[in-house]
Length: 140
Image 1 (cartoon, helix red, strand yellow):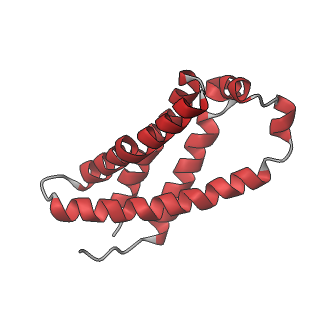
Image 2 (cartoon, rainbow, N blue to C red):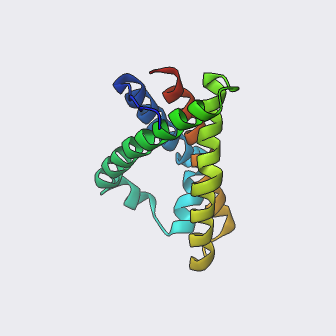
Image 3 (cartoon, rainbow, N blue to C red):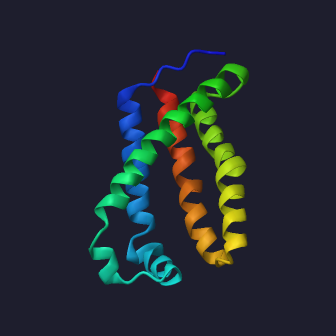
């Protein structure tokens, strides 16, 4: 198995990009209002008590980036026909296809949650993971 070296700069940039995508994605002008309505969250709720979830998301984004970097290194090792950008993008995309979409899909279906909410929540990761993959793939 290849050695995985994680560049701290790339990790920080990938995490920051992930967080920016989340802030834009869930902004009221984009999907935020629909997301709040389907989750029964008011604008007042959003103004208070959001620090803990944001900090948790930061930590989880770091974990996500570290694991994604491992997947990218393995993919590049075994698939030498792809450019660095392609390997990063495709690894993020396949992580979404293989892990995010099925897990969230099953969970939302069993919980009886709306398909539109599933599309909003999984869509965020469909954008974030491939972009993070491209960022992480460029620094060794």
